[in-house]
Amino acid sequence: MRYIPLTENEKRLMLDGIGVTSIDDLFESIPSQLRFKRPLQVAGPMSELDVDRHMAKLAGMNQLSCLSFVGAGAYQHHIPAHIPQLATRSEFSTAYTPYQPEISQGTLQSVFEYQTLICELTGLDIANASLYDGATATAEAMLMANRSNSRKTFIIPKTVHPEYRLVCRTYAKNLGFNLIEVGFTDDGTTDMKAAADQAGDDLSAIIIQSPNFFGCIENWEEASSLAKARGAFSVAVTTEPLSLALIKSPGEYGCDLAVGEAQSFGVPVSFGGPALGYMAALTKHVRNMPGRLVGETIDKNGKRGYVLTLATREQHIRREKATSNICTNEGLCALMATIYLSTLGKRGLRDLAGLNLSLAVHARAALQSSRKLKLRFNGVGFNEFVVDVGMDARKAHERLQNEGIIAGLPLGDLYPELSTCLLLCFTEMVRREDIDCLVHELEAL
Image: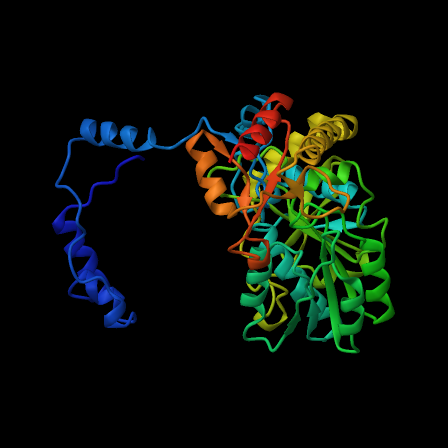
């Protein structure tokens, strides 16, 4: 329903029913100084038609026609029309909670296929039924490593997405974990020597993102070897999973866990969410994996069916034995990713990744020929990299936005030493002439 009316009399009945005198009583637990004590300064009542007109006017203020080169963990890719169409089919509209397999076969099968595709993509044995987003998936991997080896030290380099690092710190704040950040080298990748120096006997996991936040390909194999030498976990993070169609998978590099963000696979950016976290691991770690797994079976009539085979949540087992309080998988987003990956197939996904790479190569060449602009790092990348514009990057960003171009992400707020740098991304949504236009406008600043 678009509109649910509630009269003053109905409000009073509800308040009486729960034993309070006013709505304000519901917020007594919030300190008085933090509560808003005056009415909101908004216009008076409007008719439904006037509200529609007002909302349309506000929506018209959004600059939806800008030429965008933004990535940084949320990537704009083309979403074929069949994906939202198939995602609305009735087979997938069964009861949300898949605990009754006899009425949830559509949901269960789509999740099973999603898990299979994530395993193929990451080169690992098992995948769970998705997580909220890449940041919480990374934090859950940290908790999973701790459950497995009871250690509390984690190496999480500055090349890992800043927001992922913040979420990990929030998770770790009251658990006594020691999160060690190490810097990056001139090629934009993790300083593995510093990581090795910090890796002591209490190391639980080393967490490496590739392509990293600067768009550079990291050495997962070296990180995996370092972790194994300390009896620790190696966690591979990816925010742009399309890259996995071209580079070796985390499993091939010997990583124990692979986590990240699958939003690139048919899920719109939607001004920042919802997203789709994924997690894959070796079979031996399955009992410490958060969330739930769907498995395939045969029913009493010999027909193929799908059921939950692992659901170690607090509602299923004793609370202290639960592996996670993750309360749901991103069901609809996982379905969209499943349809996207299934219909593109292995060859289609590789072709799309190749197109993204070729556009980034074109942009690199154009920038390298510029006298004013220069690449900040010389490491190998995929569809994203950092460019030094030789001036305050935020001011440069604002000027280009006035010209209808969103020139990536200014890095000064996240990395003060990179205050003159922009993080640029090049997906199939931009053309070569768009890239040439961006370079021309940057040079003209």
